[in-house]
Image (cartoon, rainbow, N blue to C red):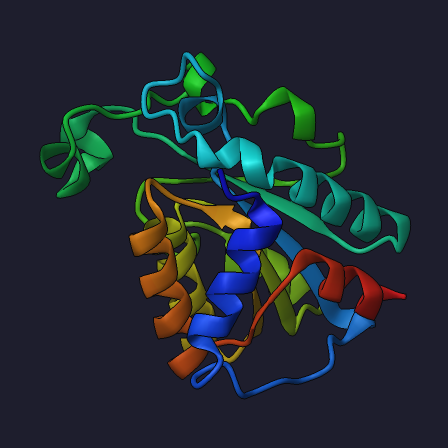
Length: 211
């Protein structure tokens, strides 16, 4: 069985023709965005458990520790719905189930539990920006560079990265700290993102740039 390190090397080789743009991380203006690493997706008894989320968990923890060590913001999202009628829209007929707001599934996975001063943005759509106060938070903190991690690579992470790019944030997309249901969808997103929206990099690259 391939390790995450082996997979990462393969992914980076596959996307190399597209992954040609690089820029240094602005250390004084960057934030870590951890998307939907909540029990619903990460816990084995969650409603939509993603096994690959456990592969990336150590890298997210390392990034979390690095950002906290440099006093840089760590921001979480939690995707949930109060009801299909109130805030579900297309998502709650497209999928067979949904995560209920305020439930066990909506809670951030315990291994990466937010600190008291860290924000959890509650969202009802794929994008972390849609219908939330994320942009206000980032503006208030003076953030220009956004490091994206979490689940799912091809849904909430990709949509958030695209939205962030369109809002003129400089995005770093962490290929070994995002996960989804299978490698085909993961790789497809890495190609799309590297071609048009953000450099695809590794967790250790970002940690080294933080200094």
